[in-house]
Length: 105
Image (cartoon, rainbow, N blue to C red; front, side):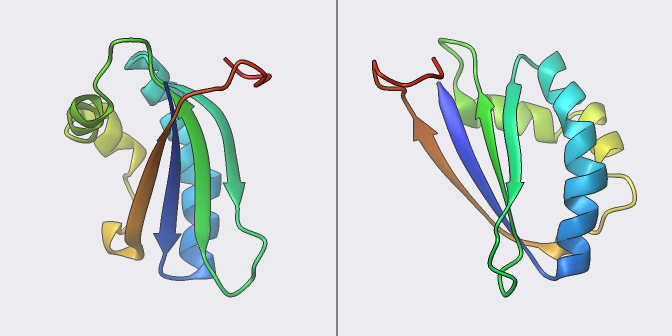
């Protein structure tokens, strides 16, 4: 199962730091929890400060429970070291199932 995650950040500076430093760290720590990162993007509109990621959970995993477990882990805390969590003003998620014709399964 895939999940699209859309993070809205307070400023361009917070977005740039979150994308370059902290999400880069998340790739390895999420993988240790069985979550693969397939892409990380920033939205092109210069007036919005959004980071969009596509992650994949293993079959049978409850994404909500795993996310809670991950976010309370020491790995996540280390990933976020030096970042003010108040700079993330919203996170939206969408669970996705690939169609038969999707190149990603």
